Image (tube, rainbow, N blue to C red):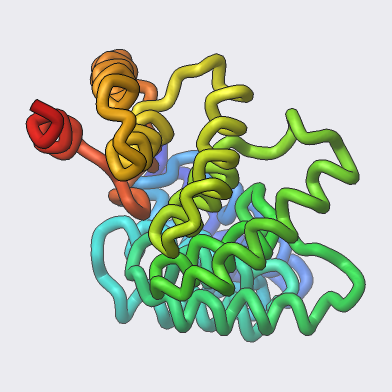
Length: 268
């Protein structure tokens, strides 16, 4: 298999030498697709590098080339290619760079700067990089900065628009969770409970995170028996895998079994 992949690249290289500029761009696209298909392999990295070299104006090639460096923790190479992609096509990739700053580097201020810049590029339109609205991502970034007022404002705007456009049951339950956490950390237990209950309503009453925070609110309001029930249920949900998490990186405010057990011990 490895020999066939090398042969493919060798054949492409020979044809490139005999190609016109327009043909080189076509070859670059073909190599790009090959690199995307075999993502993560040495052959993919070589193919993506060749594609970017053949057509330096292809933003997607630079974006694809940034990914393996991002996931392998090589920030200077990631940044070089990601910045190039953004400079060539900011509407497609500025929000994506902000998403990477948010989750992989926890640089909330740079993430917000990218989200705001994208918002300026597309007035009267709500962008949705990586499947969520730009307001959702800004809500998470501001929660990371512990700016609860702005975090809540963006989550409320996100939830309101999603509900108006598609219905409340369309809203990703993590939006209710993070909005609830922002209210909880700012001391507004009533609004926090409302959002945690909304998450549970739309996740079939399965969420270790929502029940963990509910238990803390119940304890703070002297409802100890209900707090015990909530934390016990949170532990069961956690064992079943119903917790907020992300691939590759720890999610914001991620909880662990140690957190649940430690809180339960405070109720004895």
